[in-house]
Amino acid sequence: MAPESLPALQQALFDAKQKALAVTVIGEGSNLLIVGDIAGLVINPRISGMIVTHDEGESCLVEVGCGEHFDELVAWSLQQGLQGLENLSLIPGTVGAAPYQNIGAYGVELSDLLVWVEALSISTAEVHRFSLAECQFDYRDSVFKSHQRGQWLITSICLRLNKQHSETPLVLHYADLAQRFSELEEKRQNAAGLRDIICALRRSKLPDPQQLPNAGSFFKNPIVTASKAAFLQRHYPNIPAYQQATGRVKLAAGWLIEQAGFKGVRHGSVGMHQHQALVLVNYGGATGKQVMEFAERVKQAVWQKFCVELEREPLLLQSTH
Ligand code: NAP
Image (tube, rainbow, N blue to C red):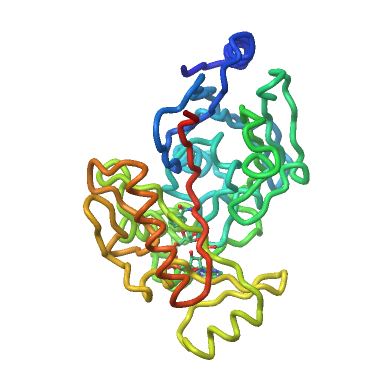
């Protein structure tokens, strides 16, 4: 079912409780791996609305309903003269799903902009407003995905976005963003120009899930100890490695998969994409089980070559019977 209001969602949760049905919440399904039928009640919350609620001078607070498309939010925020979301352009999925795994791209994570998340308790249908600290955001992770998994239904979020004339610089340190940005006409060197660059980059590398089914990055970028990274760098001098504030080092899963020989490799209807080895593609008709089996082969190959364990990024929904 797809309730469009808070009372309708609360009613659905009450009904499910009365009938002792398990509840599964999904957005657009763009980051899900489904294996088998899902028992119980599946809810696709559709609360809409994007509104500027407070003007703080150099920034504004923006509240957004969980059912909005994330990329439409990005486009709308730029039209309102606000910046901050442009690096997250063209990420598929809903606003409600975004905090779940703290979406991130090109050096920006949702948690950099988030003020609060409102969610309904799945067991009591009560509303709780999570502060940024309570969300326990981490790299592609949050309290909703890990510590209290399955306990909350996100209904809305609040973001703090800067006005476009404010002094806050754009985030240009990933890939060749700064170079591409400097090549734009001067009047386009702004947040909207950066959005255009990111959209073009993503379209050139990533298959459109509407055309070629995929769930974006299939594995998280592994974060390893400094000594492990140093060991790998001695053996593979070209290995991309990004120092983290914690002292650990992030490796690029796509590079590891490519070196393990899986870029563009297809087994039956499943394969790793030929332009971006991190994206697992269903060429048509592959079952969730076949996807899991292929992913396991990729994991094994990376483990055998680098002794690095890849972790799946999309959420797995499995039948319980
Ligand atoms: P890429 O440029 O081929 O780089 C590979 C990886 O290296 C990226 O995943 C990124 O990690 C990391 N990286 C690159 N430059 C970095 C820097 N300056 N500092 C720290 N880490 C750096 O990446 P790509 O595949 O084209 O992706 C570009 C961006 O889009 C990345 O941020 C990626 O996460 C994001 N993306 C996300 C999804 C998804 O499904 N979640 C799908 C596609 C792309 P990070 O992933 O930690 O940023």
